[in-house]
Length: 293
Image 1 (tube, rainbow, N blue to C red):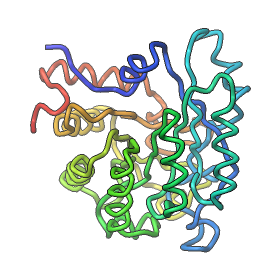
Image 2: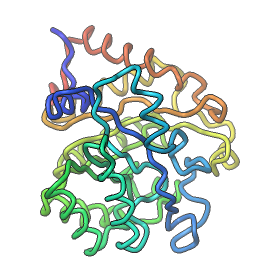
Image 3: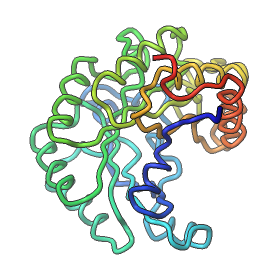
């Protein structure tokens, strides 16, 4: 049996009829647990760039990618920090500036569940009516003890309320979970995956915890390593894929961190090796996405 994973790349190729690439855009935003509104220093795993270490301009990225994929479609991906954390008129200008670019086919907005109020919901609904859109929510874990440890600065109930409102508006949502957070067992991670998969999400992102230079974690947990080996990580991911419903799109199974700032795991930059190993392990098991449900 060939391994079957509902990767978002397949969905986008079917939807747009071309290879479709996300362009990581720096919208110039900050975050409520960086600026003192809810906390300071950000989540303990965030780099100084707020998770957008590869972000640049639309033109720069299209120039780099156009030779490799000359007929590709592009999505503007507002990635680093919290991309709904600004007055709604500022959000409107930035989002529509990207959408009005002649080579942009849609938009992806990464944010926090506690930064989507009614005005933002109205704007997202407006965009969703006329453009391709999904919203990414950085949840990381459902476990409150871990949430406090990582300085997330909002409760799980906020996620529940926000995902319900986004679903009611018909807005596609992708939830981001981090694997290997301090103190979490495999059972804890499985509970997080099962929980979000039952909340009406369209997609899910999974990756290992990276400790990077410039993060709070580099100071507070300098010797921490989320997984000892690629094999350990691959086995966990395959176990999780087996409990993700097949209709949910999978957006990430590994992590990107520039090698110049990566502390641990030292091998996590080997994205192709990790992904190939996941597919090989699924094939060895005869497993597919959702086969253990």
